[in-house]
Each structure stands twice: as C-alpha cells, then as structure tokens.
Length: 179
Image 1: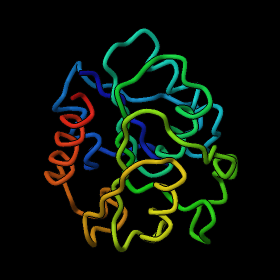
Image 2 (image 1 turned 135 degrees about the horizontal axis):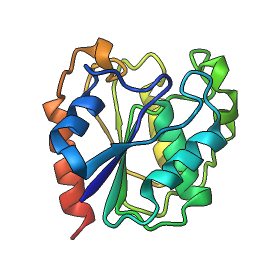
Image 3 (image 1 turned 180 degrees about the vertical axis):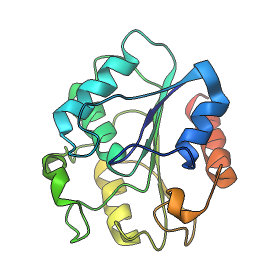
C-alpha cells in the first residue's frame, strides 16, 4: 500500500499527524508538492496530486482540510490513475465565513460523487466545518462519515499528536475497502 498525503493550506508541520504518519511509513508515503501552499490554487493542487500518484499502484490519499477538497475534486474530475481510496479528514465548509478567502479557487470543487472507497472524518467542534456541513459533503460525495468527537480541526493545534484514533479509522477503512 502506498499513501499520498494531501495536506491543507500551508502544508502540515512536523507536529501534525500527517507528518508523523508519513515519517513512520517511510518510503510507502509521499506528499504532494504544489507551488501554491500559502495562496492555494485548485488546479495547481490537482496537478500535484496527479504527479504524485502517476504510475503508482495501490494508492490511498490521506487528505486534511483544504487537501480534502483538492482530493475530492481531482478524484471526481481529473483522476487518470486508479487509486484504492481516500481518507478525508476535516474538510472545510466552502460556504462558511471561516473559509479562507485566499483559497477562492477551491469554492468550485465538484460536488459530484466520489466513485472510489472513501471516508470523511469530522470533528464536532471544527471551526471550519459544522457537523451538518460535513454530513452534507458526505451526502454529495456519497461517502460515509464518522465524527471523532470534539477535537477541533484535527491539526497540530488540536494536540492529537500521532492521532491513534485516526490510525485505527484508517486501518478499518482500508480493511473494508479492500475486501
């Protein structure tokens, strides 16, 4: 299994669960490399996903925040390479006042179904997405969603460290997706 990390705006720092997981997985994991980390451009991020998965086998996308929107859009509209699935952790609500204005190109994310196995992980007190908005995204994308309780945006500031609960969710998701 190969994992491609799709972080949110500004990338994930060394204390973020994505970076911890990537370091643990070693050569089995990589990260997208868009040129627009701080002023995100949807086309640039989708192209970065495409570059990272091209020619790979058994790829699962592990996305966080704005990266979830890029992953969902790439899967729905641009996916050329087959992938196994996508773990989408705390996608932001594009209609919320908290959505970053600098990420305006992400408002156009395709709302169609994601035709691969996927799982949305949300938090009850995410400042960027209410539980109702997460369920609505899940409905549009035709994916199951699970809440992990009140853990904020599940970023470094949330203090989840290596986020054992997320690792368990990923293992269960992969076991079910590859049956």
